[in-house]
Length: 222
Image (tube, rainbow, N blue to C red; front, side, top):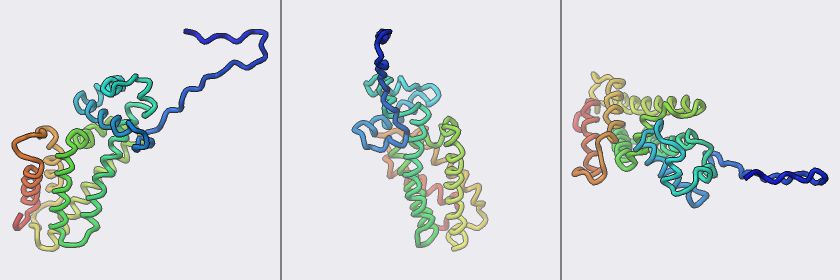
């Protein structure tokens, strides 16, 4: 229905109904009751349908809300994906820095890093899968940052491998770059095959992957 037109003889200004200002992705921080639910449902929808095929309407339908209501929480589908990536990076940064900046033998820190990464992937399958695959759909402003994040994790892994070689715990004939590429290909592929409730639990899978990774790095006694 069209809004009523003001009376031509009236000197009052027409009443303007302002739309509520849309929030930014930065406001999806848990301050509102459904913030976490919006993110979790989006992760599930993006994973099941693929980000390119999923729509804001799909997310709204899964949440049981109108599409217009969902825009109270997000600016766009793209900004929602950016938020998912931001949360993932925050999680990964914590144990990456602990491994690279911590004390102790490099091979011990390497082992802890690999285990923590594998367990994070196994307990956040959909989010981990999106983070490793769908970054190409991120906003232009976020894509360069995501690429730098990938380089950061790769440098961190190679640094740990090289330090282990210097300390005599890893085979110096192993190329750290090739070992890193092999490990990332294996670990980021976990969401492609693993399902909760599988015969092997997350801890078993993580332990097996860590052992394989250490062997790839030339560990003396993985």
